[in-house]
Length: 393
Ligand SMILES: *Cc1c(COP(=O)(O)O)cnc(C)c1O
Image 1 (tube, helix red, strand yellow):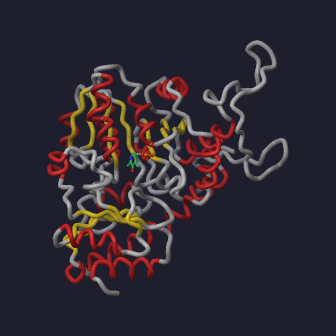
Image 2 (cartoon, helix red, strand yellow; image 1 turned 180 degrees about the horizontal axis):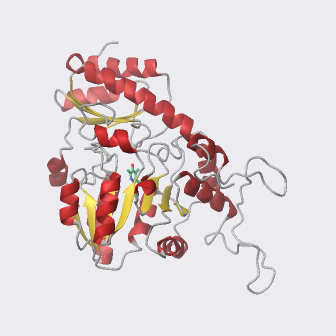
Image 3 (cartoon, helix red, strand yellow; image 1 turned 45 degrees about the vertical axis):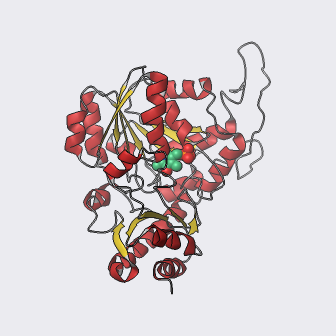
């Protein structure tokens, strides 16, 4: 079922790529675990020969994801980082990469350490929320890589402006849209070439599966989607069929979950911001707050403001640790986007792989904590975080 541009996302998550099974009428697409397929003759088969090269369950979830993202094609990988690594493998050795200075720690490590050592690539980091700085640094770049909202500072990047800069420089543009999910923003509609997701986060949504996605625009450089498809097989970076089925099941509630999570996050961010002084909070960072520097851009390019809130706390490290360990519903654990709320400490967890000087430069201090708002009742979450911040409810 091709629902592109015809149905709302909340309908497409339930129907795209999910036609009932032709043979049996099963409403839920079957899970094909076979690794190999009978050949009808030399060079003759029914579309499949070996499961790394192609699998019907994977095809289904890839079709659904491509539809959601308004992409020409989508490819799933065993983790977000393997999706990112496969994207980097499309570059010629010695390529020049321009990347956002605020990135998920593992992607930063891949760009700053692994890719230069393996492929001789050079990487420059600039603040992508400053589009003039991006325009000045882009000439000569082969790839522009950014996240929006970014991790953990929730900086908002003007997607359309960056897409234009990339096109002018002849560079491929990649937007890691993990923090927004397709229900929050559709970067390909703004001219981006490739959208990346860690499916481990909102797409999976239940903290029980690792995965990654690359979705390629029909306006991307010719041959790029084929090259990614080729490398997915050649590098062996494929999601298992059972994880593909689990991901498909999770996508069916994506719109519901994100809508709820974002509405609760907006409510919590407002409350925390209003009661800053009493709660010992120095700064509330949330793109939905009018004082966020990227608020207007976010309002223009996003369907909602997402489920992530970052806080700078007053007090010393002992107080920060007390807050992290005294919530009852917000679990002190890394990751985000799941139905259960999480609280984490970027300097020691998600961004431990980032060089301390780089952390200092972009201001990821010891007093920064990040909340991922889940699907629990908003009033319970509010009580939980207030209790942790004040020591009483
Ligand atoms: C988690 C995450 C990744 C890495 O994905 P994995 O599935 O953990 O490999 C990449 N980018 C962002 C923004 C993330 O949050």
